[in-house]
Length: 630
Ligand code: D5M
Ligand code: FE
Ligand code: ZN
Image (tube, rainbow, N blue to C red; front, top):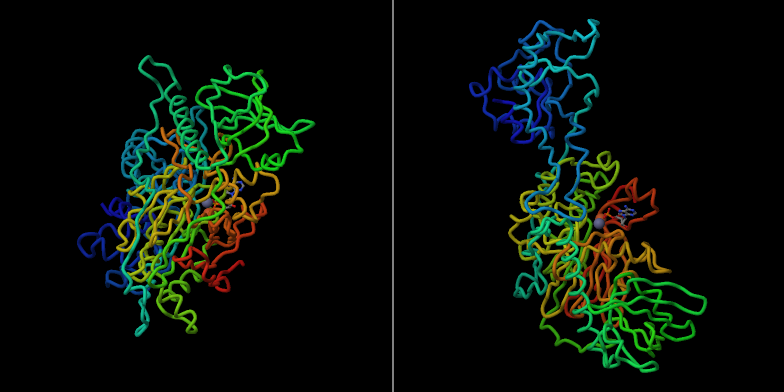
């Protein structure tokens, strides 16, 4: 059946086109011939015009169409098919492609992601069958629908793929056809004679933090005795206990932190004694004279007061809800500690230098490509690919390109479907499969000696809650098939030639800018520095960033990285904090309507190049002159 075969390949056909083509299908032309023809036209809806052109090309139709000679469906004597109506069964195309979610926000179910693919259209043939029956039973042959009270009203009639009339009472189908480019004709190969030094240098990478095999099934809703929610609460409890345990280990590396006791043992302490506790910050409040923090560990809860005149009171503003800190002070004997010191987990001020490398190698760090968005800077990205292939202006650029050995993509690699209100209107590629196909078509032009590391973000087909173990393979298959790509989790730690690169998409930044005074999304590297001080990628529970109820907290920054990369905010910014190079790598998407509304001003199409040896910035190459809307 032509319709089904086309649907399987994600092509739609209008009723008139169907009636024209079907009699010839399998006899005079094959499916792949038709698809090739339509694909070359950049269309995904086969309408009468395309069908005629196709048949004419095969000599199956007279060259000129007779005046008014439109094919009518042979099925009924009713009105002709509504031209331009797209056959998607009872699901209007806009609904089939639009009102969709990208996975659950908090509790995804294993193997059951609710990502729209436009697949709703695949139901058509089955539903058509039932229309056929209904149509027969009701004796519908035209546009007159008998109502119960005997009145008759005129309603528009649309013919389904099988020529069966379908009565649409409500929504008109969009008549505009959509067509889009998935970059399958973008083919760039290394410039002849260009010599890549990096191709001679052996690969040296390991994924030091890899969550791609993390099991993503959430705890069951009910426990053995049928009680709802208990297992979930238990999971979160073990997540936070894991967080406290890991942070204790980190804090104990600080020689200033000593004599830590469990909060539950404070009862044995006499008033006036010095104590140190480590725990989650449940609550943070300002009082007339200072700040009151509520601290919780596995054994109990205690309040800590720090007076505004203490030096460490300045640290309070950077303490986010549910982060873990240490507090040292005098125990009052009545459930309160008068704090002298506050310890953030933080990173040590100085780091031991790593042994030098024999040769310079570079890594390109990117994020938020947003392929599929109509604001994706495709031209700039293609220019960047050409540059990677040795089309450079001068020797300085040639040196950069020649030594690039790694390319890291930190999430939001495609724009996804149904991510924010009104996104559909800003999609150039309204299909998640095609978005990944398009991305892979671009990335296959990255020279083979460059290893790509690709991780997910909140726009990707992946678990929405953090951490994100990777992409759902069934949607992002083209990425998995790229020969020189390694799929990484969000977060991940990539060890390049002995240097640790912590890679995260960076949603935690959202909570920093809402919770920490003085931080905003125009300065994402500063917000990342706050996360690094707290040694956590997204500490706050229950605000903007959904955290998965995994039994272990993988968002703790357990070992001090040499470099910390995130994206998400779409603004390129970098700084060095206590020897860690922090960089937000911007985007390849020009400002969207939504971002205009919330005053986010992106800095698209900038390519930061990292010297792996020093884990510092070597250069930023700018392609934004090729990005429209900047
Ligand atoms: O995020 C792109 C930018 O938009 C980033 O700065 C976060 C911001 N953003 C994303 N969602 C929201 C909501 N709901 N409110 C305010 N700001 C938001 P991206 O992940 O690429 O959409
Ligand atoms: Fe993004
Ligand atoms: Zn994002």
